[in-house]
Figure 1 (tube, rainbow, N blue to C red):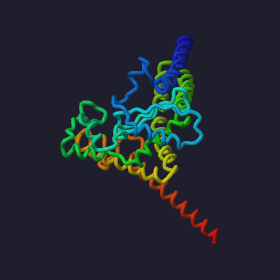
Figure 2: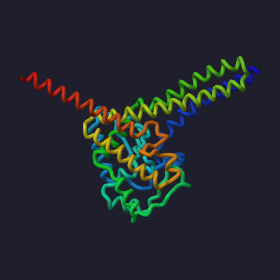
Figure 3: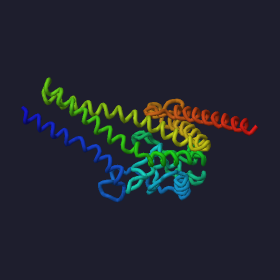
Figure 4: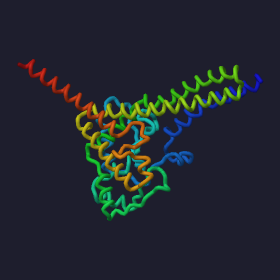
Length: 307
């Protein structure tokens, strides 16, 4: 029994590094490696030159960058994603939604000629005819203002430049797994190795799942704030981006019918999102109002001192 349980503990300790190694592989190896193909999840379309230039322009505004290697690609997902980090030798991969590369209506029509709308399940996919009233409505809602694009790009750069965002999942997994090892030893003395193993694994995955939800919520809110405090144009762009996305989601909800109603609320919020779009927009308005009030008070104090 003791020898058998010792073997179980060795296997469990061997499982702990699997997530960190997989995490580093997904974030650090995003080139032409054969094993990387299944998880790259990029669009076949190339980003526009204007989007690449915008990323470089926003990069120039950042302070204290020691490294700035990055790769701009497009994704078929609705929201942007960032892999890796600017501080890594492999750099960061910035994935932007297709609408970020649309500079004008004609470009949107050309790219959207074979547009298919879905919310992650191919069986619910709908082919959209662009030369129709619905097609015109989709194109108008896909377009983003320059300020909205600035907000999205700067926000992803803030995420890409944060070692905190990059390392937190790894440290959380190691900490939770180590706690679970204690659970394994404690329960094994009372209920045996089988139940102890099940309890330890259940605790690990349940606790890490909860951490991931809270961390994604924190990262979303924090990166919004870190972006909008850089200037009023980012606050305006953030509100514009979030509200335009909600309008687009409401259209998708109507087009996709029952599946759309299950995944998108009436106001355009994605139901399973860690932080609702409407909540993010409301928080940005609060931050903008607070900054404007502070600037006004500072300006009034300055005038009084001059007088």
